Amino acid sequence: MPKTAVGLFENSNLVDDVVREIEALGLPRKEVRILEEPLSFDVTGVMSFPRLDYEVSLVRELTRIGATEAEAEAYLQGLRRGGALVFATGSDQTVEGAATIMNRHGAVQIEKASGSEPDLPTAGQEIDTPMLDTSILTGRIRQSGGGAAFFVW
Image (cartoon, rainbow, N blue to C red; front, top):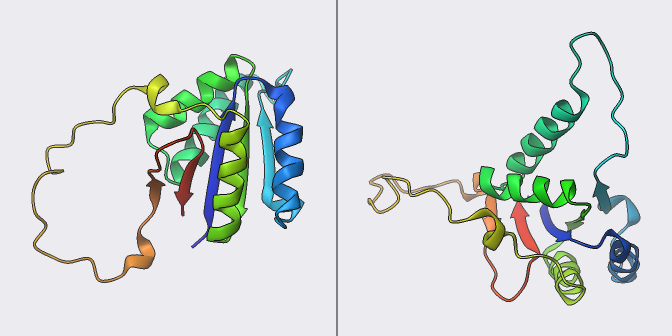
């Protein structure tokens, strides 16, 4: 299963240094991505809402890799304020190294911006059927001490 570290940076000028350091770990450039809000949005038709389409697509992709709706919205808010996202996908060791670099450069802890996760009524109940195939587990891996988040998808 792919593992991705995601870091939100309030200052988009920092991301080039972050990416250079991550690439120095041996992560191929195609596995390290930078995302900033586009300066303009192309209109593709009469009923086109390009900014909305962009934001919906971004939230969908973030939740696909395991971000909660609140986390995806926090990332989106960070981009709206001029920030940038850095994604690094690879093996456990290189992704953890990438997250360390992101945290050292000031990746924002989005939990503070997004509030708490939803309180699900079944969260405290025991599940009778054990999960046999752990390869289908996806989601965010919590790690204290920094803003970069790990997602396994």
